[in-house]
Length: 188
Image (cartoon, rainbow, N blue to C red):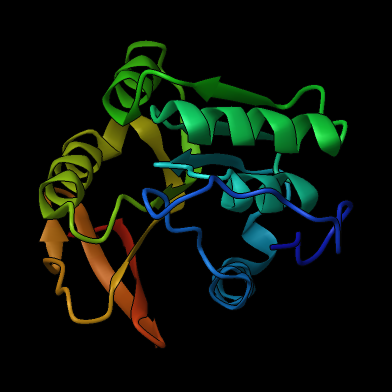
């Protein structure tokens, strides 16, 4: 796996061993960042269920102002740290190794406003999608900037709800067995 574009373009990234973590493919990451486009530069970006950290590192490479990673699996946390160290990324990020709920609670408590949230739990963890997207929809007004985007990567055959609280899906992109669902705050 490699960084696709930006400052760290073509640099190799490690991935956790075994089947417990399913990294976002290079091709799907390229599609994601092509859609996000210019909104990544200067963004406050959140990578939930970060795995190898490839999505958040891609955001850093493309000029994100700050990236929060959330991952609780110890082998994946070690790989994220190793990837950041290998690329000599010394700042502009925070890694929450106690999981997604802890990071999201902290962002709300500390009144952090973010521009892009990437949600990628294990495909079979349907309850994680629901819980995380519902939390984001419930706290959208306090934690999502104007025009912020929440993107969920999921199995193509898994259908996510059109709406979670204030979040409304506006686009779905399918690629192979994977899909990306894009959400924004609903306009009333």
